[in-house]
Image (cartoon, rainbow, N blue to C red; front, side):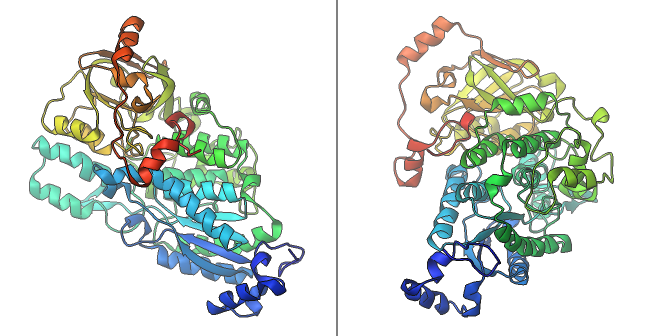
Length: 560
């Protein structure tokens, strides 16, 4: 490859545009409308997950334009290409959710394919929702070409009867309130219309917004990007600046693996825990680290959690929203609270993470509390173990009441989410029960479905202080209450959750990080002698292939 348009830089795109033998390649590029002059510039791909189906993505057309303007201003040439996006809320509770987590791998593979096949010099990754952001980060880490992430931004809160409303509490949990006759059918219908007033990722610290905050803390997006609201001028400026900056990153040869170090991942986990983020980060952060060549054990979350106070309490754990966090100073302000313990690291901007933290300003100390006035002494996620989860399980401990952090109950077992929902809605779950949902792990689901419908219905029915739920599946970032997921090994791999019986006592002790089946070792061994490996739920299509190669939840559910 020869030196390109940017002084002293060897461009990857020279593979398709330089030399006599590349005349056919140039002809095809000219067919797109490319001029001879543009051939000399770096080729920047804009991987966009725009579609008309996902609220978090419907506003991306405008951001695509601003990114494109920025790239051309910076001296590059932009090429748009698409990536799929699944709305977990729409996919929830039916066969569609099987595809959500696997789509993370699909997105990474697609971006890798396009970038490698067309010899792109750099990437701007336009994303927003749950699996799209980690999938794009995995691709960036894997490809290791200059990359910058633009998250499209959170949704504004809704309004109903002069009260701010949000997606999870005012739709999913409203089902339980309707079931208990606390609201009428007309009120439920009104909430459906008001809870989500427009585009953007759901309003609380759910998975999409958690991953946006993680991305900014990792240093893979511009400062302020995670919380800048969808449709705002701030977001458009960030998109434009990201376009300009990616050309500079190509010139500097600033690649993702220079940014995605162990130090960056530790910073991201710390801020995630301080925010009380989604338990799904225990899947996504290790998966991104895996593609970056960084070994990141699940135990790291718990170690950092024990020394990181939870200073932000957004929905579903609290009453604040993403817009409040943005107005309070955003992620730079949160990092400012931890500036003395953050590890120094470079970012996609021309500032180091410690410089960004130093410049962060807290505007509202109620939204972003001081360390000595934290909501909790520990971070949002706890990793727990025991004979029921020898390889670990995760819980959002900051969304669990003090009463339920230590709880012993009797198991009611279900081999699918649908069967559990039928029992919950049929009033067959009572105080003192522990709902066990199994065969919903990465292999067993397949695809490790989110259990927002059962957890939100339990909360909406007023049972979250008397009923726990455990699963080898996973939870939405909107889940609250004593809900323990990612139980590993999963049932499909012969994990102990597979042999739990109705009526068995299960002890949950979050402060001491324990979850145990109160059954003798001899009885457990006896049950395994008669346990039979079930038939796969899905036997064809790419999900069947996925189930054969996906790893356990405790290793990030990556495909090897």
